[in-house]
Each structure stands twice: as structure tokens, then as C-alpha cells.
Image 1 (tube, helix red, strand yellow):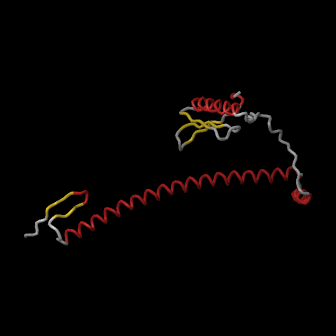
Image 2: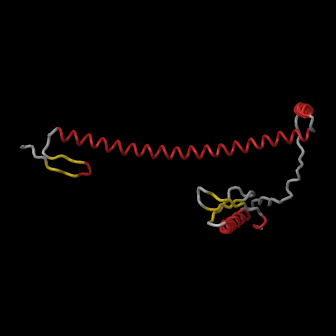
Image 3: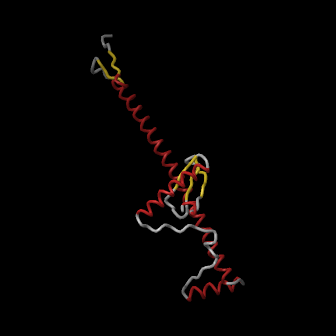
Length: 178
């Protein structure tokens, strides 16, 4: 049964491996060093998912087939929208069908571009966050070192004790008899 489901394999730069996924089971994935390894790993994951669905008496998703989309569908819409679309198509001197296809295609392309830009921005934000955290940590370390240096200078200027503590718990003896 698992061999009827689609398997998509793509390279993932971030994980440095091939990732196998399935449209019918969007939450499943597997990775491998090669395409073949990713597919084999995914087949195991898919078989476990099918077994789990079967044991829990859940309906399995239908396998996608190449002819599952005929290129036609019916849609109900308000008369006012139908009229408006027909008027716009007439102004463009094209059929209503062609006009609606152009609108859907433009919107679909826009949605894909938006999703790609959103993903790219999320990656940039993640990278900037890592940089800021790293810089913050570095700044804290430098601030601690500066504070230690300042406290050490203060201890050297004020001989309140014959013994002073240096950074890293190193003790030294001060001779103030000179």
C-alpha cells in the first residue's frame, strides 16, 4: 500500500542531507545522505504511519494520481461578482474563462512569492537573532573582564590589606614597608 503514495525528495542545505516528504502525509519526513537512502527511510516511516492509522481505525489519505486534476471545476459566486468579472473580461476583449484564469494565476504567483519572501525573511531574522545573541554574550564577557581590571586597579591603589585577591583566585603578597 505504501508504494502508491507520492514521495518528493529535495536537498536541504541547512541539514546538509536529502529530505523525503509526501503530499498525502504532510507531517511525515525522512532524511538521508543520498536520495535513495532518504526514500528508503521515508518508506519505513510511511509504513509505520499506515500501520498506526490502520490500528486506530483512521481513514488513510487517498494516494495522489497524475490524473486527479482534470483542469476543470465548478464554482458558485455571487451574481454581482459574476457580472463584474464578465464586464472586465469584455473590456479586455477576452473570454470570461481566460480572464478568471489570468486572475487566479496572478494571485497564485503572488501567494507563492509572498510565501518565499516570508520564509527568506524568517531565515534572516533567525540569523540576525543568532548574531545578536553572540554579540551580546561577547559584550558580557568583555564587560566582566573590564570590571575585573577596574577592581584590580582599585585594589592596587588602595592598600587596605596586606593580601589582595586577583582574578582567577590568584593570591599575592603585598609588601607596603617600602
